[in-house]
Amino acid sequence: MTVRGIDHIGVTVPDLDAATEFFTRAFGAEVLYDTLPRERGPKGGWATERRLGVPQGTEEVAVRMLRLPNGPGIELFEFSGPRQADPAVPCDLGWQHVALYVDDVDEALRRVTGAGGTALSEPVPLPGPEAGEHNRFVYCRTPWGATVELVSYPDPQAYEKETDLRRWRP
Image (cartoon, rainbow, N blue to C red; front, side, top):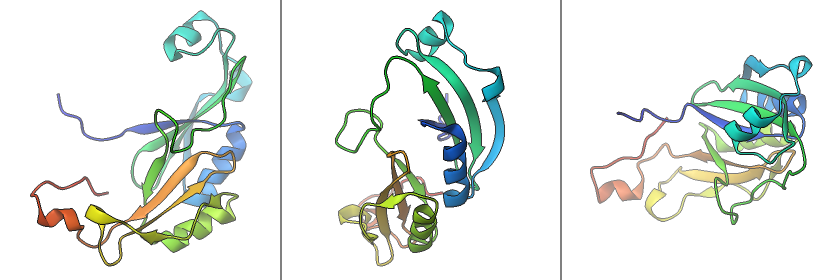
């Protein structure tokens, strides 16, 4: 068995069409297909609850797969039901952000904010073992509050002097 990499990332959003617009404008995503078109939904019941591990009464309203220009897909889910928490922030347990490798952090951040996202700071140098002259990152939020990191490390990273192992680079 060989793990090749991340195939897709599932993201629950409050409005599938608005989220599609954000990912399209901010990151150049394209719609591949709708797994559950809105007009065929909602889909719920025991099978959905068991398959996804969601509370009783939860329904999938719509599901869509997006394609990024490079890298894994993004699968968008819109749910209705008895429970829906606020988006996780980095101090919460579990999967807490998606990092997208970009060639130009400043331009990517302009696109995110132009699409309705929010920068949490200005881009800053990558620290410690990831440091390199032009290696930078910035955290931002989607319009619905999910955390996205924009990262670029075109220069060798400091840790590379200590080991022959290398992190996967897009």
